[in-house]
Amino acid sequence: MADVMMSQVLANGPRNLVVKLTDVSDGTGLAAVKVVDAQSVAFSVGGQAPGVHLKVRRIAYDVHGMVVRLQWEAAEPVDLATLSGFGHLDFRRLQGIANPKAPGATGSILLSTIGAAAGSAFTLDLEMVKGVPQA
Image (cartoon, helix red, strand yellow):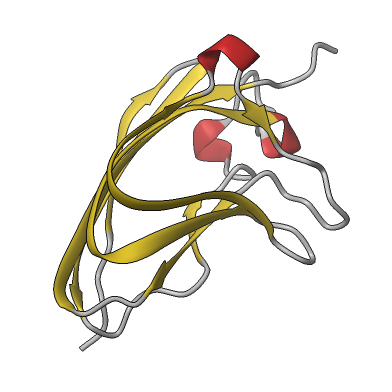
């Protein structure tokens, strides 16, 4: 049996996107799971997906018994955050952390776990801004 991560969209407005992620591991862990699909029409603004213009404003996390690695999806994924323990990362004063737009960047966010043992768990709240460019 593999880990089954649960994802819940808490807010999906014209500007803001908030996603809650939870997992209780059976010890197999997760590898490069797309947790936010910035190309999805479900998150579109005016018919345009946020893509590489998506910014992460805040991450609240509670991670026990493993490490969670978040990356921007690209030809070579780019690290966004590595999380363990509990706390929050607040990037609002910086107007959010933007995708570095590496070659092949999609704006989507990937999640992997490191050292997941049976019974280890995480809860993450990702607060994002859809920075779709003005036409």
